[in-house]
Image 1 (cartoon, rainbow, N blue to C red):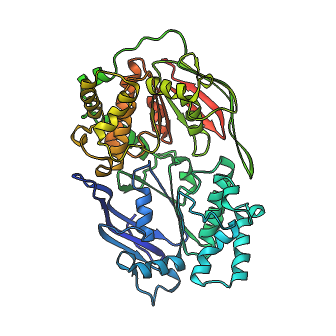
Image 2: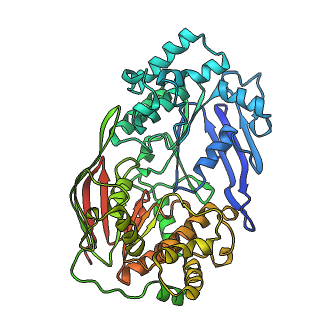
Image 3: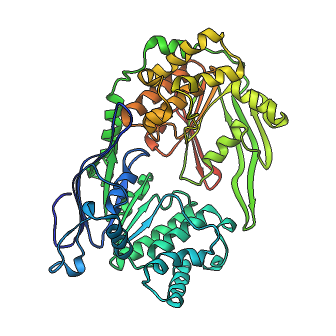
Length: 511
């Protein structure tokens, strides 16, 4: 992984990136050493929070490294051009270098809302003066055709879907004919058909001599990269292959995580948070013929298609699928946050969409614990006070007991020492831990979690999964949406979604 040859375009040497997070700094990258070769399609996989985006930021020079070096070699004239130290360039020189050599595709689209798609694609060369306007427009239209969105060239971003916006962002990254393209989850917001189209475009560009570095959650892409690296807690490794050519490294990581003991979770805390619950034979969650259709000026998009589902109390259930497949929309139906277009949703036998908005909000507070993908903590309250909020809203527990109960929940996620800090004073992973503690505050029978371990390091993630298993064994229903296939090994039931449909609903045999 570290041996340089004459075709090296990027060298990373002993790269460390540390974010200051109050009393405990967070190491996002830990002594990374990579050589990126001209003309390769390098794939880097890992969970959310593993350091993938930080790694791309170091390559593109958009974030300052803590220590180490990042060197750029332009292979077209290596003999007369020494390595360029990206880490040491001024902001002005970095901007010029990026404009000449780098195409960046971010996870978010970052399109100008008042400009047409073709004008958005023209922005980089217009700013750099690399093309005359007429040529620039021609090039932009060609690239929009390449990503199969040319028919919408003169629409504004508000009139197209999220997947189409990502394709525009990809076209924009290509317009200045960059030597190196770095892509942060470029297929993450696309349906499976469009994602395949984008991947094929990348493969064609590599065949033409372009260098592409792509990070993704999706391990299924690994065989299609010319080289594959994994990142876990800021450490980059090259996965070993077993005799059948499949990845063995992932299995080793899973086994290692299972070997860890959940040191932060005490038995007394678990007993307090998860007293045994008895339920009748009524299912926890029932969906009958649920459709969800979103309408926009660009047309209709069906996010869920004829969903029929029954989930029981006391189960640990995972919902998996690519970004954009409908996982979060399905959670929104179950939690009463969004209305189905057609169909029925019953939670604990209650038809929740026959309630008024205010009735449903109070019902949700008492019966559901919801962990969103983003933390949604109130910034002016401490972690302890944030955890107490649902108790106050639902008037649960005597007032003088709420602080103690909240502290016990924070202990479950290893945050008792951070309890009196504001959210901005702790790391992203710690904020997510506090959000999980808050979801448990009213002792709900159902906990719904959207990527709850996505921003956690491996040990904290292990603690959370252990907690969920214990809560499920006490009678609670845990529904977790995840990109991580390894989590499905620990759940009682796995639901696989693709393009808004359930394509598999698997229960473990011992259930």
